[in-house]
Amino acid sequence: MSKQNGKQIGYIRVSSITQNTERQLADVRLDKVFEDKVSAKDTKRDGLQSCLEYLREDDVLHVHSIDRLARNLADLQKLVGDLIDQRITVHFHKENLIFNGSDDAFAKLMLQMLGAFSEFERNLIRERQREGIAMAKKAGKQLGRRASLNKEQINEVKHMIKAGFSKSKIAERFGVSRQTIYNVM
Image (tube, rainbow, N blue to C red):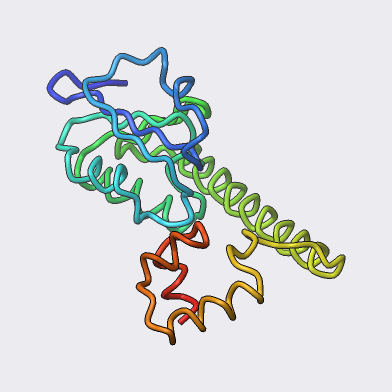
């Protein structure tokens, strides 16, 4: 599994700041860990990019599961292919798959199948979100954050601006940020 010269590097990802990363790779001895708390909709993630820049030949990249690295098949295949080309081993622990440049046809098939399932799952989630939003709109539910100021307050803010009051004083009067006042303008 691991090569003697290389380092054991971990990549951990959760989808939001509130989620906990502790269970991922908890039992794996690692030299360095990179972490992201964002969606894997693409590869533009600070932690992932730092990890990819840090990795060197003979290192082993440990990832809890395939969907932690990428949520679409094209990104997954490119990431793993590029790492193998650099002679970096990729170990997915949940699936117990290791990619190190050997021509393991079964491992390649599993990567493609699991990557495709991951992409399919992401598409289903997005579809359910769109359906839920459409239903909420149809039911007349408030979506997003409520406005900081009502129509009467907005009119009053506009009059105060015309009268020459400072944006800071207006914001203080209504208990909102100056940016809210600028947005009204």
